Structure formats: structure tokens, C-alpha cells
Amino acid sequence: MPDYLNGRRVTLALMLIWVFVLVASCGLPHVTTDEAGPDVHDIYVVKYGWHAGIVLPTAALPEDALPPFPGIPETPYLEVGWGEARYYPSKDPGTCTLARAGLWPTASVLYVVPLRNPPPVAYGGREQVRLRVSSAEIRAMAASIRQTVEVDDRGFAIPAADGHAPDSRFFRSSYSYHAFNNCNHWAAAILQSAGCDTWPRYTLTVDRVMNQARECAEG
Image 1 (tube, helix red, strand yellow):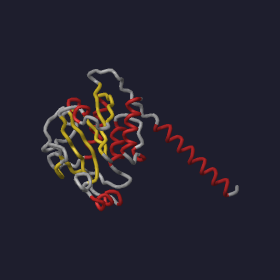
Image 2 (cartoon, rainbow, N blue to C red):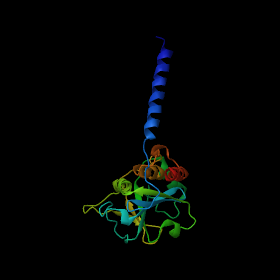
Image 3 (cartoon, rainbow, N blue to C red):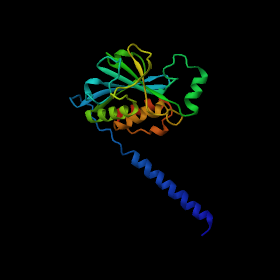
Image 4 (cartoon, rainbow, N blue to C red):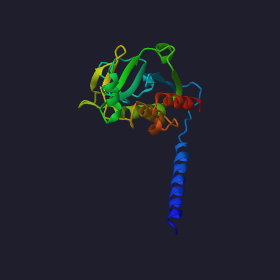
């Protein structure tokens, strides 16, 4: 058989595998109803420049769902985000820090912000998306977030830097940050753990995160 026919067969096989992956990916249903109830909770995805924060109602979280965060007071809502260890905490990172954050693998941090009010009140006109999730889905999100956090011998999150908002903190993360595992990949993965049909590996921008959150909320 001519070599070019073998090449076509290989190409066709790869295309069929890709179609199968696409179909399989679409099988991540988000089945929570729009009706309020004891098993339905509001979460929010909030846009900050190049980052997205995910806000969870603390009353919906089991006591041990997340590790203790030293210095973080108990509040009705907890916002979490993830990013590069130098760039994210810096108020004026500069070009060199920005380049460093994407050119090669570096350390990362989890940003934790306690909120006394829901995002529509706390953040006013900032772009945000509300999603309704079940208790099982919010536990799955918390489990994914917990895997991000580096803890000490007591199981406590390890502080890395003061945060930008009042009472907020950055904590050390066990993940590496790089161009192919950035803050938006992380946010999309957290949404995926709640049943949203996202593509974390291909979610490069915060606008893509927000669009996928809207699609999940509307689905």
C-alpha cells in the first residue's frame, strides 16, 4: 500500500479520536435547578483584570472542606483565586515580573478574601456571573481548591503575603505556574469540578473563563 494512503489512515484515525474526545467532553452536565432550596447555593465568578475570583458561601461548606487559613476571619462568603507567586501579590509587578510569570515554571499562591456581603453588594458594577450549584457540586469545588493549597504539619495553609483587600491573604500553593498552567486554566478547572462544561487546558484568558461561566449558568 502506498505510503500516502497509510498517512491518510493515520490522519483519519486521529480525527476520529478527536471527535470522540469532543463528544465525551460534552458529557459534563450541569443539572442544578434554578429553584432555591436547601440543596442549592449561589456561587459567583468575578473578573479582576487578568484574573478570576471564585466566591463560595461558607455556610454551604463542610467544616473540613478547606484547610484553616490563618488570619482570615469567618465571614458569610470566601473568595479564592490562584496565580503566580510574585506577580499576583505585587501591587506594581512591572514588565520583568510579568514576563517571569509566563516564560517558565514558577511558584504559585492561592488568594483568599473574606467577604461579609455577596459579590453584587461587595463589588458593585464589577463583572461577575452567578451560578446555582448543589451541595455535592460545591463540595467538589472545595476539594479541587484544597488540592491547590500547601499546608504545614498541622494541616494549616501556609501564609505567603498580605492581600490587596482588607483581611485578605495569599497562601502558598503546591502547583507550578507557567504559560500552560495559568490562573485562568485553574479557574476553569474549578468550574469543571462543579459540572460546568469547560476546557481548562484551552482557557487562556479571563474573558474565556467568564464566557464559560455564563454558558454554565444558562445551561
